[in-house]
Image 1 (tube, rainbow, N blue to C red):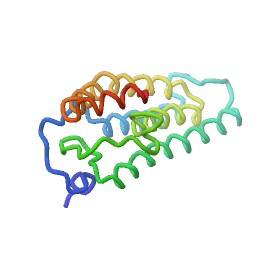
Image 2 (image 1 turned 90 degrees about the vertical axis):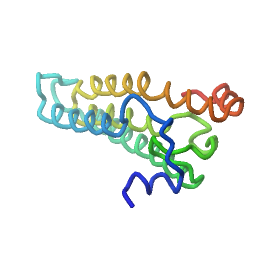
Image 3 (image 1 turned 180 degrees about the vertical axis):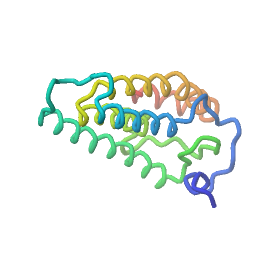
Image 4 (image 1 turned 60 degrees about the vertical axis):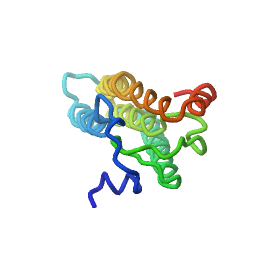
Length: 166
């Protein structure tokens, strides 16, 4: 089996579950770009003139928290046997664990990791690519996901949206 099928945990293919962008690809682009441009200090976009240890520690803590949030979301999906990738039928709404704090923990983790890498590299490139990734996810991904979930789960998803913020 390919990796995408394994991450779907046996869920059937559902072509109606599609979005306007591929979040992992945009995350990878943003993360790598931040790392390269920030690490090389391209265009002189340093946050401070010299690397500061407090920013490094803040970036490291943010990275650990961001990765932890994203992995917690993936683990919860796996435990509930509902698919992570788009294009597969969502089996159930996951509302516990980290999903009781945010409806999109994987995306929160992705955006947080890019911003944290900016702090680690002492570069505003992290803020630039964090904003880019946020806009892609907020405008091209989440609206389609939420529309799909509202159509499939009706009032159950609407109630969840009322209780838990993005």
